[in-house]
Amino acid sequence: MERRTIPASDALALIEREESHFWDHKSSQSKGTVVQKIAAGLANSDGGEFIVGIEDRGKQAVGLDRWQGYGSIEDTTIVLEALARDIEPPVPYSIEYLGIQGREQQGLACLVSIRKSESVHYTADKKVYVRRGAATLSITGQAVTDLSLAKGARTYEDQLLADYDKEDLAVEDELAYFLRSYSPATPADIFIRKQRLIDRETGAAKVSAGILYAESPPAVVPKRCAVKVARYNTKEREPRREHLAATPITIEGPARVVIDETIAAVTALIESVSVLQPSGEMAPVKYPPEVLKEIIVNAVIHRDYNISDDILVYVFDNRVEVRSPGSLPGSMTLDTLLQDRFSRNPTIVRLLNKYPDPPNKDIGEGLRTVVAKMAEAKLQSPIFSIEGNYFVVDLGHTPLARPHEIVMEYLENHDEITNFIGRSLTGISSENSMKDVFYALRKAGRIEMVPGKRGNRSAWRKVQDVDSDSEEEEPPPGNMGVVKGAASANTPSQQGAAARDRTRVPKKLKERRVFAGPIRNRPCPCGSGLKHKRCCGRSES
Image 1 (cartoon, helix red, strand yellow):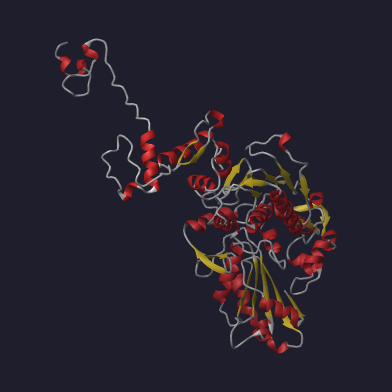
Image 2: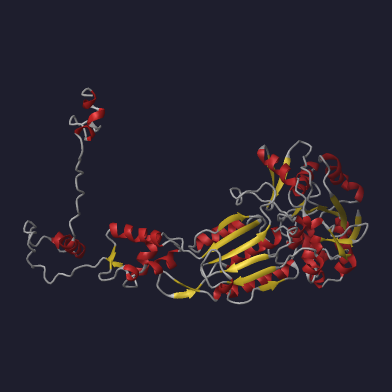
């Protein structure tokens, strides 16, 4: 336990910090049950911090006046008892007592840091809480069982590095950059120790420290942990080397830098790809910016760093594919992917979230955001899959509209459409499946084949209307029964329909089957539908 005085600016930063998945504040008047709830919720989730001694924003307290702490350390006993006695088992925590310079009369606030635990923690009333966004929620039944199973997984981010220690970590430029905006202001050596980024006995740094702050993580982490970005000039599911547009790019550095540079590199490659639009124009591929960011952030912070492989990002002519090492963590499945959440690397997730503009701002909302933003952009939802020991996101550039609508939209501005163009617009890979779309539109009377084009040259066009020279034109032979001058017969659509009727080839009737052979093998004359030998002919035998 430590006690220190901080500047008013740092105190105000703590007061104004928005509540989140990793941060909360409570009044010094809060009961022990409130402290238990938030502490157990953080330990059962990804860890985090909360401060006791700050009032909610309101008319009675604004700015620094919201800091209303305890009169002395002895008065904070209720917090210590909640953490160490009332929660079963006790949560892993550290506590710091903070006062404001020149405002000692406002008392001490308790800044509590909670680490993610391998146990499931129960409050005194035998309830289990987890953190979801800025809320602490109770779970029961199967959810508690799933949490217990997920807790059993050890994370590689806590492994110690052989040739990287606290002295190396303390002088990293990325850590200095991070601490310049960290509140309350904390020296590098104290921050490293408080955040459990090193082994206290040996001083060896952990994998999470190398991933977050090392200038070149692949140089200190004994596993491949960079990102490779490649552009393939093809739509094939399994590209070949000759499809590579250029040498793949390798991106490495601290996690924050890797995320920013990967997003920039992938965006540049995507914008170099032009695709046919339903309007008939060629235009650069565009995805909502939130989509690319969330998928790349998800790959960096949730990948399995115990697998010696890089994150692979492939940009194809019609899609982006992101392959992240490691299957789904904990008890998560593809069916629960958008509902459940589990952090394989809670330290990386939590500390990355402490940057001024964190890439993982909305914890637990990443893939849900991807699906929602793709729908808003009228693009089909991404495909999530597990291939071997990799989590794969397939982000296709396929319109959300039905293929039939896309075909008709294209024909609004073009005279005809081919099977190849149709597949390019709709994302359909099979020629026969594209033909089914054309056939359905022909059956509905919307399109027809372009006369004179067959085989590889075949094309389709909107049904052509036949213009009438005069409303008084006599009806053609065979339509003498139509009332001359009837208004309904002169509409363009009905004129076109009449023209189609005149040119329609009568449907060829199916020939009746001729039965040959002995009478015993022919259908029974009684009409039963059975062969004669199995019906009335049975008595003859």
